[in-house]
Image 1 (tube, rainbow, N blue to C red):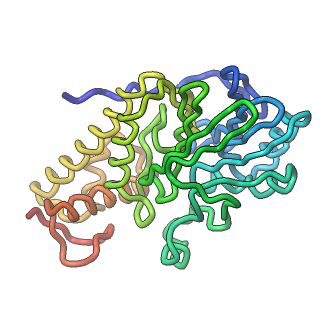
Image 2 (image 1 turned 135 degrees about the vertical axis):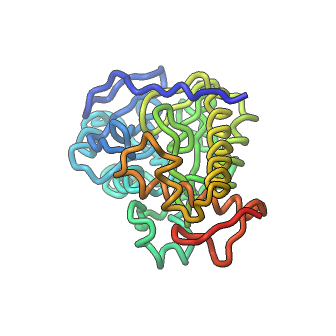
Length: 300
């Protein structure tokens, strides 16, 4: 039975202000709203005195100065990055220089091939290289907090969620958001990995999620199941399009995304491509070349 994802589109916040969310968590939201970032990037501050910063955000001077002001009497010891998109990681470098903190992440964006074809992912930060490379299950400890790194590829190959043990909470980056589904855009985005990473969360015990965009999520299992069902439904919509004679992705997008602004069709096409690749990999759909936006597809 399909469950509707209960998106939350309204929440209270003020740009440039550090908002206390829980005893251990504060947040400063960058003024970079867009169809992909919602109200803006939420940079989380974790702990007291000696703190960690999660997803430092974009290279927006106002945002960087707001973080410096909020933490002018504290010391930043860790800068944690969920993944390397331009709204998440670029501010790590100036903040690292300012505080002398080390950066943490799964690794640089994509593979060597991806870096040579950066025009395919113009929204990616190819300059971020973490000081400390994290692996799935690694623990990071501060004075009053403990973080567990969870490798959750799909949105990007280097995406990490961070579990805060002391509050049974999970910082989900763009993996699970409360305002929208995530864009899974090849070549670095991978739908099969994304669904597997969602299934990983179903086996976890966290009872609250803090995404980098939007507000918190408490009905976490319902959200995760809803996201999985949404992707499986999308696959069925693609199959239905093929049965009706639409054989390329560009012709499918207006049929599948009837209520979506045409300005977002390009992103939608990349998301359909990621689902199509999964359908090809699992043998349900055939094509005579490497899957792309322009490829002609047929049902097996």
